[in-house]
Length: 332
Ligand SMILES: [Zn+2]
Image 1 (cartoon, rainbow, N blue to C red):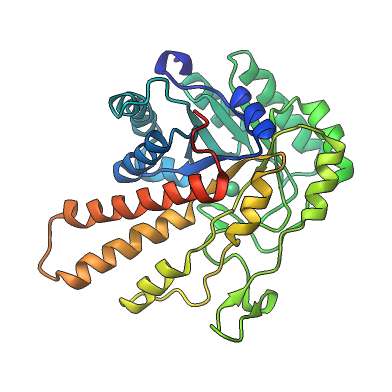
Image 2 (cartoon, rainbow, N blue to C red; image 1 turned 60 degrees about the horizontal axis):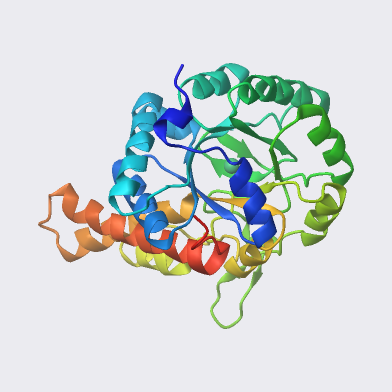
C-alpha cells in the first residue's frame, strides 16, 4: 500500500471546490511517455496551474502502470525543481472499468480514480460506483463516475452513438453512490473525429466543418439539480486545424477531423464544469511536430531531435489551454 500523500500528490476535492467558486476548470491531460509528461509539468509549473495527470487503459497497456506511477512521482519532484514550491498535481485513473483496477490504483498511489460503469444499466452503475467509492474514500482518494454515454473512440472506450445525461437521474445517482464528481454527456465526444460530416454544417468560406453546439441546456438542468457539484467533461479536444493542416500537408491523412470549439469549452469552464479532459490535441501536436522535422530534415535519425520539437509543440498547446481556454493559470 502506497499513499499518494507520501508521493506529494493531492486529490481533487479542494481543487474542484476552488475551481467551481472561481469560474475556471482544471486541465486533465493524458500522458503516455516522458516528453508528454515533461511538457505538461513545464506548462503547469510556468503558469502555476493545478493539473490532473491521467492514465488511461491504453496508457497502461503501452507504458506500464508501474512505470507511469513512478513517472508521476518524479513529476512532482521535477515541478519543484522548476520552482513550483507546492505542486498541485493529481494522478488520476481515466476510465477505470472494474473494482479491481480501481482498487489497484488506490493501493498503488493514485490520488483519484474514475469508475466508468456508464455502459451498464442504471442500478448496476450505481452498485459498482458505490463499491469503488466506499473503498477509495477509506484512503481519501476521490472518485469520478459517469452518467450518460459519449460517442467516439478513445483507446478501448468506444461508442457509436451518444446518450445525453438525464438531469432527472443525477441527484439520485450522486446521493446513492457518494461519488466526488460526475462526468456527463452533453455532446462532447472521444477522439479526433468527434462528428461525422453529416452532423456538421460547412463554413462556406473555408470549407471546414462546423460541429453542432454542446447541449448547454442539459448542463444547466444538471447544475440546477446538483448545485455546486463538480462536473467533468470528457472528449473535449478542439482538434486545432493548424495541426490537422500541417499533418495533412506533410503526407498525413486526417480528413474532416473536427473537435469542440474552444469558446464553448471556455463557457463551460465558467460553470460547475471543473475538469476538462484533453488528449487528442496533444497527439495531434506531437504528430505534426514529428512530421515537420522529418520532412524538413530527412537525414535526421536522433529521436531527441523530433521528440524534442514535439515536446515544445505540446508545451505551447498545454499553456494555451490553461491560459486561454480553462483559465486555471495562477490558481496553484
Ligand atoms: Zn473519456
